[in-house]
Length: 565
Image 1 (spheres, rainbow, N blue to C red):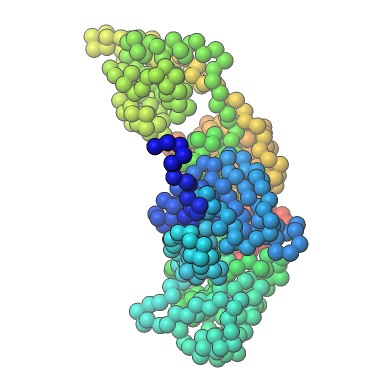
Image 2 (cartoon, helix red, strand yellow; image 1 turned 45 degrees about the vertical axis):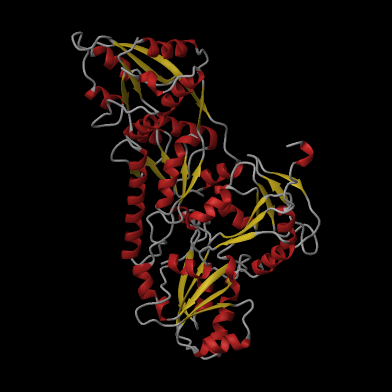
């Protein structure tokens, strides 16, 4: 086919109208994740983009539909290209969202128009779909979990039960007098979408329409996120409840909330059904001072307990200053110089793997070599590389634990007496001395260097020193020294959790009170121990009749809040 007969690119692309759900990214559907992975352009408000961008590919363009407060009038949407560090690529003229979608779809691009909740309940999504239809732009709709349904579920407020009462949904912003009259005359459950400072007015509308003032209701703000808070009251007392909780008056009064009116929202049921807000570390801001790669799985575990992890790298990993020793050792692996190789960290696995890739080698180079690993994460890193460890300590996951299980050198059964030990430049000599005592020769090789990371941003440093964090997890003595060195000492209200006795001793030497220690030296056991601490603290407060507060709320000047249960 000659160049002159090539088909022209499509004038219009494809638009996916996608429901992003109530706020928890975990509530996105599988189809939504698939559409996001293939998108060229994302069109949404900032808060919705925060939910969906995790699943978008590198380099996707973002079109913000939020109005720019610095520009008078309707606002100027900002087009931002995400490429590791977002920068403004263009400032288009003032247009509504439908025009933004049309422009994004030109040239055959795949557009995801994400909205909060479900597209079918969005105020403007139908208009944008009609605009696509009129312009001949193909589109599809990916439903999402409606906010009015998802938020009550996370608040522990069932909307229906075996009695099968009617459920009515009302948007207080657009509800007519007739709507209020109809729901006021009903004895069913009413789910009201409104704002924090308009809840009392909506309650008043229902009372005026016939609902009894003692009808129970719950009010939930920031539903399905770790900022979620729920208050239980009645139609007649909700205004006083929010005032006593010092929630109102507030500059944040315009925040959207979901109010559920009816017997099913009563406090007696929430005591047993509030599964989300009763998580052991719910809302806790937890500092995770590790390298970015190491922090990921730990942060995921903390989120499962309801915490908000904040990763602050305290250690940066760099190549050794003189790579020749490492190069010789890796070549020795291939030529049969070693009987064993021992990995004591994920970073050691990473260093060897990178050197393998540099030489065009893969896991097959480990054939005939016994492999030892300290710790579950190190073993998992090897398995991901295609290498199953032959030896993992049966007891303590440390150099000492590895030596407990390491076999002595036997010239009859071991054809080679040498061990390759790739390690950090600051590693202890315990393992080397122990292996030599067992009769082995050891090539103790610096595979990587650990250096102190750069200081975190000023607001993070202030939060650390000022008590803005509820807990900090220390996974080694070096994380203690480095965090204090780059950011300062954590405030005395912050819960200090340490992975083992040596780390705890270092923390105490720096003037820190150790509140939690892992039962064994594992980052996951450390997170479990912190969750157990949080649950015991929560149960003690409930048994004493005290409000459940986070540690950071105990610091001087902190705003005390009532329990969310």
